[in-house]
Image (cartoon, rainbow over all chains, first blue to last red; front, side, top):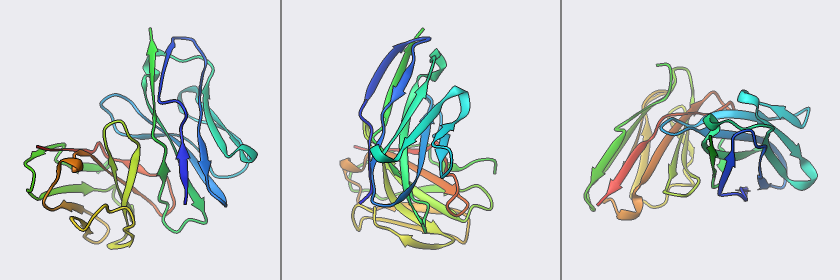
Length: 115
Length: 112
């Protein structure tokens, strides 16, 4: 069965610090990978996704993620965080070929950025 | 509409009562998903619709949970005889087949 593990449950950073959130998945085949973000009081929205091609994916707001197939990882990074990045971040996966598009989510990481 | 709309946004009910949660997907999105998010936990898949059929119901936790969808529009998630462990935020998402999921703001259910 597919599963997603996010190692950091709660991260606290100061503004301008660098960010890396870990995500590992368990699946025997080819995968699509996603990071979603939920800002306080808002709905979940897509930050970035990987389907194929360049394993370094760039998303909105300066975020990027690198797919490392050998490590089953898709870590999220940002060189310099801002207070407005305070949010909950979810890594998600679905297996290819997927007949459903159903995503399996990790438990989420709460990021708190101190001004 | 412009986004996925869910109602009610908040629902407080007594144990043993039935509740209905509604989801209005983005127009043209044939795929619709229900997820549950308990406090401090990740999103738990409940059910997937393609059109008005549900080829994947594997996440429904018990037979107290059911869902239906009218055509390629509104879906209703019904929880019968609610229990305290049903307290959670119920999220709906829609997409074109295998496309990006767009989420609603969720319905927060509190069972007293």
